[in-house]
Length: 298
Image (cartoon, rainbow, N blue to C red; front, top):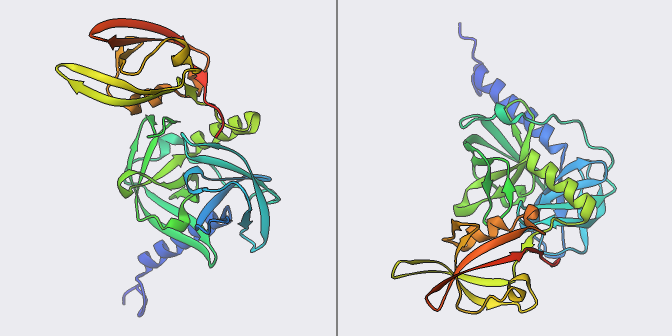
């Protein structure tokens, strides 16, 4: 006689399906729906008592925010701060302490491991599962943020899951689900979230470096760099004497080839530091040293 049930899934698949449901329920207990005046569906992650993390890019407006908690209650929420570089926004609300959820050790996740993305919409939890498609080392987002790991998810991310929880096969928190470039789902690592949350709690936002330049890549006759197409005269670059048409060729001796490279260097740690910019003006090479300022809050 077979051990498989006469109807439905074989025992092995039934156990696997039940485990996925248990993991989904575990993540759903830490996941809220985030409502705003814009009407966009998105989720949030209960981070600590009274604190909720969500995807900064999905949060188009700062006012009239509300949450639907796992128990169905709806509560008002307010924005504490944003970190566009890491796509982390921090909300405050009367949530109560969240259920315990272990953090997944960084070394425990590898490409091919099972992961779940859990969000919440007006109907309840939304769950998707797949494999970790890629797990790599530190990287920079397109907006210049530093992330401890690049975690690409091999699953289709429902829009309502943006800002929700990502769990591993053991039910441990990997990070927050967000859509990445070319429709590839990503997880913002939990350690990156923790760093951004602490900075926002202390300072209200995550500072970014500021030069006061609008730049475009340029390549012509062996010339490669970033041409200045706009400048704030009161900015660090303006005060240092940079001019329209200057071509920035190197940052502290390292060649510059893209605006993204420049943005990556203007991270929170850059504020207040000095940088030597090698530039070309009228065919002549020059070097300008300036102190990086802090970008004003949006």
